Each structure stands twice: as C-alpha cells, then as structure tokens.
Image (cartoon, rainbow over all chains, first blue to last red; front, side, top):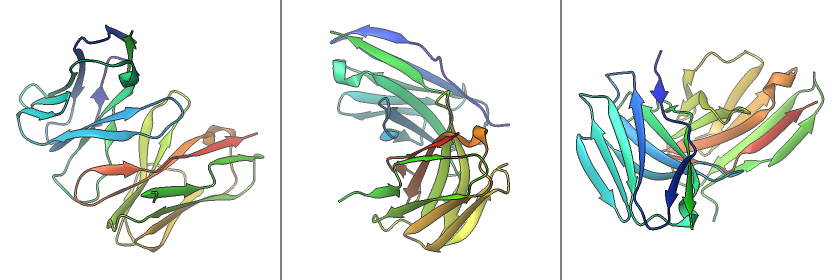
Length: 113
Length: 110
C-alpha cells in the first residue's frame, strides 16, 4: 500500500526564518511529487511540483527531491504569518495521466510574528 | 472566473437519504477527480475520470456513483447516506500532472 508520511506538527517558526517541511514516501515507483497548502476551511492549493532529483525554486519556496532516499522537502524562506497553514505532500505513480494523488496527513505550520 | 466549482457548498441531510454533488471546471482539462477529506483532514482519492471514462475507482462503497456527462463536469451521487459519509468532498481537475481543487462540499449526515 502506498504511503506518504509527514510529521503532523505543529511546526513553529519565527517570522523571517526558514521553515523546513519534510515528507517520505513508500512507493519507489513514484514519479511526481507535489506540495499543497491548505488553510483551515479551504481547499488545497498547489504550491510546487517536482519530478527530478535535486532542487526546484519558485520565489520563496524550494522543493527538494531525493528519489534514492524517497524523500521530498519544502523550504519556505523569509517565512510570513500568512504562510501559517497545513502543508500537504502528495505523490503520483505516473509522470502524467489520470492517476490520483496519494497524500500525507499534512504538517501544521505556525509562523510566529 | 472560478476554475473548478462545486455545488452545493454545504449539505446537511438525514441518514438514508440520497444526495448529489456537482462539479464543473472551465480549465479545459481532460481529467477530473473526487477526493474525500475526513474529520482528521486526511485527503484520499475516490474516483478519477479521463475524458468521461472512469479510470480509478478506489475501494469506495458502491453507494457512491460518479457520473461525467462531458469532460467539463463530474458529479457524485451518494445513495443511502451513512453517518460515516460526513466529510468534505473535493473535486479536482488536471491536464497531465498538477491537480487543481475546487472549494469543497461539506457534507454532514445526521
């Protein structure tokens, strides 16, 4: 059974610092990796996706993928109070197509002003 | 314009009733999905449709029946509602990889 593991938190980070969120996955055949942000009572919002080993940067966000270790991370630089949310890691078996995402249970991030 | 929309936003009903949730996307995507997010916030895939064809049907009770009249719409009909069906149901759509979620339908079964 495919599993995605995340520390549920809460992870508390001071404003302006770097928040580091981690995720491991069980299915070695996973091809695509996603980070979603979900505010309380709202729908998941796509932040980043990554397919290849290494780092991918988008503004204040950096996703890191290590397929050998089956590990994905998300770094948020210059954390803002508005970054406080639950961050969901998700993986997909395929590089495209219609398969559903397998989600972790999310990490609750709190940015302290 | 809302990319992925769902109706209704809230649904409160009695056990044993039948209800439907509707989803529409205006992104031109080929694939649509239904996810369920339970009270512990765990998000799980239920169904996937690609160009009106069912692709994934996870271990979901057959009381749940998805219908896709065209590739922009995916509806979810639930028969004989049970207390355990109370959850938030999210519709999503994708083209190739990244999935975009609708606002969710909060279902409460009493």
